Image 1 (cartoon, rainbow, N blue to C red):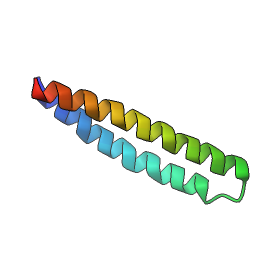
Image 2 (cartoon, rainbow, N blue to C red; image 1 turned 120 degrees about the vertical axis):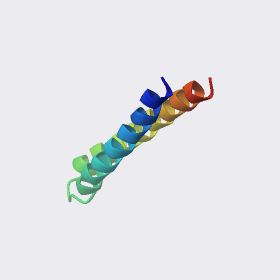
Image 3 (cartoon, rainbow, N blue to C red; image 1 turned 180 degrees about the vertical axis):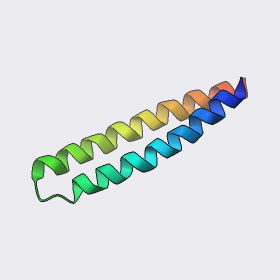
Image 4 (spheres, rainbow, N blue to C red; image 1 turned 90 degrees about the vertical axis):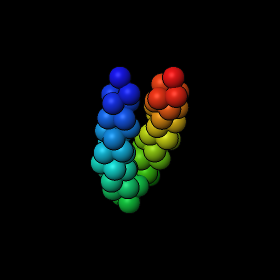
Length: 62
């Protein structure tokens, strides 16, 4: 049971790396709209990470 949550955290790390490279490429664009979308996606990524990590840690302690 705990292996699934550890696997979830590993997949989250992989997704974070790939998503962050996409966000970084969007922020470097000269368009203001692309920069705003990139920063918005960064905020969504941070919030999603917080909840997934918090859920996994609580499940691992149980």
